[in-house]
Amino acid sequence: MLAEGYDPDAARTELAGWNSAHGERDAALRQLTDAVRIMTGAAAFRTRAQAMLDVPPVALPGGEGERLLRALRGDAVLAPLALSSLAHRELLCPEDMADAEDLLVLAESLFQLVELAGGSGGAEEALRAQGSEVREAVAAALDSAHPDRAGLEELRRLAARAPGVRPSFVTVASAGVPRAGRGRAQAAPLTG
Image (cartoon, rainbow, N blue to C red):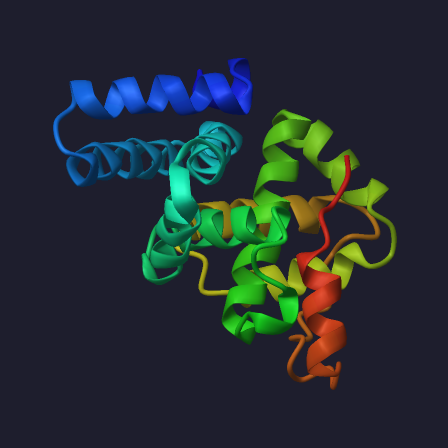
């Protein structure tokens, strides 16, 4: 609820109360990240998990939320969400991400687009609505090391069924796209 129903000041107050009710701050933050980790396992809750990870940067004092997200860059499960949050808040530039991180952000953006579109028919339409660039985006996302392998397989199936979206399976690296251009194109949010 913090992610959806509170302004930043109220979120800070609520999170401080939650932290004190759940013991020391580190233990409380571990519980928060564990809850987000559980949400990522349920494909239908990726956007809610993202919203939960968007709370610490606004609710924790002294840059502690940003430090938490930066620490999660190395987390095998939460890295795509942490990177997406850092990029969305402009706390991490695409040029500062490794190629593998660019691909994680891209795949996560596509997963969230598909989730928000609801159902395979809506998801196919949402992918088609992205225009001609979506083919390369899907191919690059499928080439990522995103931990949600089932989500990648579903994305592959959706792309195969959506006319004009079928990925060419040319990887970004082999397409000869310059590094700086690749990061900007991949980290850009997709609309539905």
